[in-house]
Length: 274
Ligand code: SF4
Image 1 (cartoon, rainbow, N blue to C red):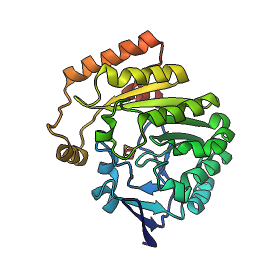
Image 2 (image 1 turned 180 degrees about the vertical axis):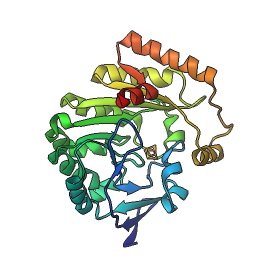
Image 3 (image 1 turned 30 degrees about the horizontal axis):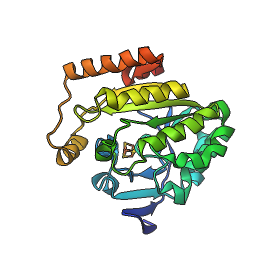
Image 4 (image 1 turned 90 degrees about the vertical axis):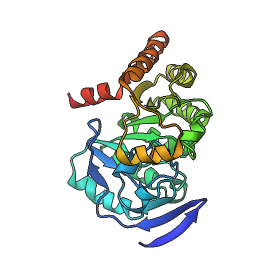
């Protein structure tokens, strides 16, 4: 461990890594690039808790590890691998507050686009606006997705440290206006938390306005995240087939009414496999 500091309530620890790109387990990406381990946004439904080893996983939303030699290692990795689609990021938010100090995401995007890789960015942060210059220079080799689970204030319960959904919407509008391909991840949908029309109709409207695709997903229980959620939410909400069938068909009806291209996460995985 090289250096330990604080950023607000978060403990920030610098580490050195041996690789920057890893083979992605998600069918839509060839590689994953995660500049940080752990995430300051501390979303209570975050699957990354189940995939992050050690302290950042155990102390979710309290400790973030920073891969300080990431760019140096990435420059070596891009020469070893064949260019493909890189998910930035898959188990952390690439634009969480610590990125304003280290700029690892910004520098990684530059390196990847220059080397002929396609960068697919997913965030809940408006800090991404800082990098509009880099993103627009990537041309067609970049797409940007914002996770928006609801436009209501209930987001504070499930995504306590993430940007307000209105700030995410405004950042999305700016990026879409540059002609960058954009999408919205409407998920995870949680029973009783963000499964009402008033949660998702404004999201579908935003997708219409910005010409963004919407990817919809339900909550998928996993051991660590489920236990974390059960400590935060009372009562514990159950994901049932009937609930999801009804909720999904209501969302899809709205997508049709607004003329928005909506797909489920499963559909996206199927398309990526072809
Ligand atoms: S922003 Fe993403 S990675 Fe960060 S805690 Fe929330 S769901 Fe997890």
